[in-house]
Length: 268
Image 1: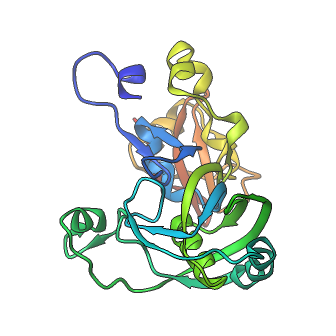
Image 2: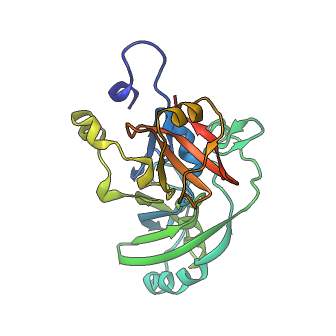
Image 3: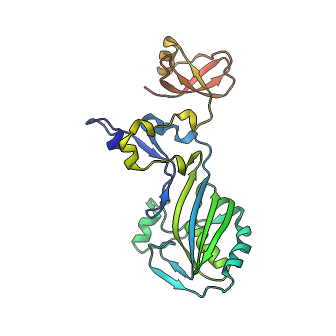
């Protein structure tokens, strides 16, 4: 993305992302470019939606198909029925222990760095929320499933826990992120498509963050850019607003403070 959008020479274009994807996963990965990286904390909807396969009968070192086998176990003859029955137990707020192969920090290092060095450390359980969990089909000890969940959910761990819940072992086979907050798969583009038409890939912040937009004239826009309070335009009733200048360029994000508009994030 830096090569596609970044200026030639000079400093690198800032690029940020909203949530990581496992190396073997596919799907939605929202990216922010330039000053928009500062807007990432304002995205309130962090829910995720996944389609995945759950492979029964074997656990792996990584919790997915790329890992080496750790243990094998028989698969119940009525595994499909059992999966449908236990899935309801996982809906709602539950606790989940993050996998060793994850990007979480512990002791100044990422967990996957410790795992690759052969270390296993204790991880505190974290509260997550599963909004929906559905079994789409089952054949040859492999289940096709979908999941809607909160930020911070590890589908690999969910697969392992589902395997244990039906009296077997399991790992995640494949993973496709179908949605990340307001970003959905059918609107996503491949890197090749973005490189072919870069401008068509850009999304206005107003489409993602539900703040209204106000327009300031030349003097007020200049004051706002300089970090000075300006008069709050009449009719602006929201606490936070996007601010654009008379040329409709994005100036920043303002916060209503009484009758004034305070600059909270300013783009030069």
